[in-house]
Image 1 (cartoon, rainbow over the protein chains, first blue to last red):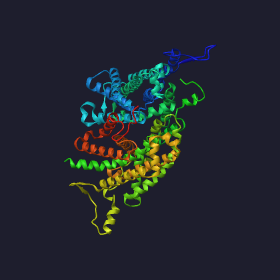
Image 2 (spheres, chains in turn blue, red):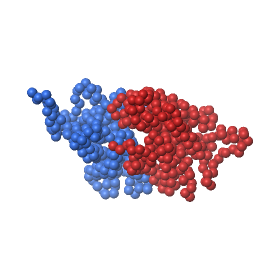
Image 3 (cartoon, rainbow over the protein chains, first blue to last red):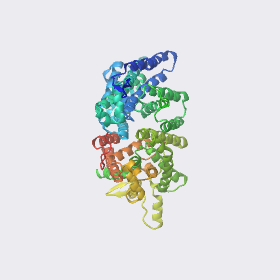
Image 4 (spheres, rainbow over the protein chains, first blue to last red):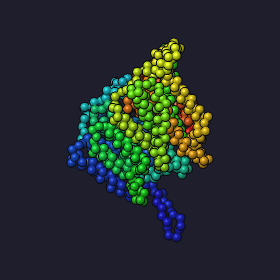
Length: 326
Length: 306
């Protein structure tokens, strides 16, 4: 929305523009391009490729949470369900159909979307009910996949080993491409009437519907977009690690980390989740606790402090001063 | 064949009601999702371990101790966390994250203090005081399994079920027969109107929060007997189970939670008996089905549809 006061007219003339093309391009050039370039160059300079890969995965997941939580207000507490389903979609394609890895990653994305479609009725629930139902859904998918009765298809709880497609370099490239796609979606949401409408729905669904917004359709699209990126991320994760167990790819740490990173930076922005991942995941790896309990303790305290003292994220420090944060 | 899982299901179900009722109270009154509910259960189990292993007493004595202790803990925690949380833009969502953080802190502290090993208490020790008292009075001691309709069940299950029924009954009396309980129900149905009529909402909520945690701790005392053993990581699963039960019943209605618990308990036992490899899936599938088909719960009003 673009509002100006014309000379000789007290009432601001508001022009609803379909897309803010100038800021859209600027965000792509100033935020997305440098970030993607950095992750393209870093493997040549920095040796810990696994760490870089994990950074990319968490950037994708945090932005995926941003798409659904930041723009629609639905907290996906079982977000890892899509990630794990994507990883197993990849594994099943490779194990049973000998699909080439890049194609299997696309299938992983489709699996994520299909699971999202299956779970669209959950969007009827509000508030905490949605979050809990989503958590239950993710755990249900985990127990389904890990069921020994399905060993012939998913290998049950014994995990999968995909030696044929093992290629960390290409998988890393795939992850960076998915990150670019995800950031593209967020930049679009941030600069389009579509994203504006979503935020209007988040604030007040009834008023938004009165203003002509198709509430259900928009929520479903955001939900499926968020499921798509998580499914793709799961597929590329399976490609990269090639050996994993259900508990690895359905670990609730993925959901929690993605949500906390996104919140720490600040949702409904492009920069927020990026800043959140870089700072928090950076600290996580710098400290590198040898005893997990101390890490868990510090992390728990950090999460509580975040909610109590900075509920709108780091970007709120800037927006409070009236600065515009992309 | 069917009698055993059905009766065991009812016994477990009554216990499951106790497991859920504290969560129901907290969510119903404050719209706060206490994701650390299961961790308070786990702490209750550790109170029982303390009473039994350190003091050498009947673990049943841990029930009043755990209740009083965690009512106080709850009131203190309420003062520290909730008013600040309520100021934020989206307290219901942020409460999930806040209490997730709290559950991490509790789990980490307990792990640091006691290690990750599984702990249990021999089943016959529960109620040993009553047995001893009965012996002293010359009555026939009631140790060992209890017979119900020709099937025998561990005495610990029966004691847990009986204590659960008493606790739920007391919650009912609190909500429907005391002044503070009436105020609590007022806050439950309309927070802003209750505030406008001059009810001290903060005090009512603090009491409900304390009682909620106290009930969780009582349920925790029996957890080592019902689940075999307890580890510091026990909390997360217990929270989800408690949620299923609360949602199955309905919000703010202790009888609903009792019904939800029994339905869940019977389903659980039937699946365990006839389809054991799928038993893990049950709580989650049941939760989603209930949320989608009958979002207000078995005895509920319409409240949850977006």
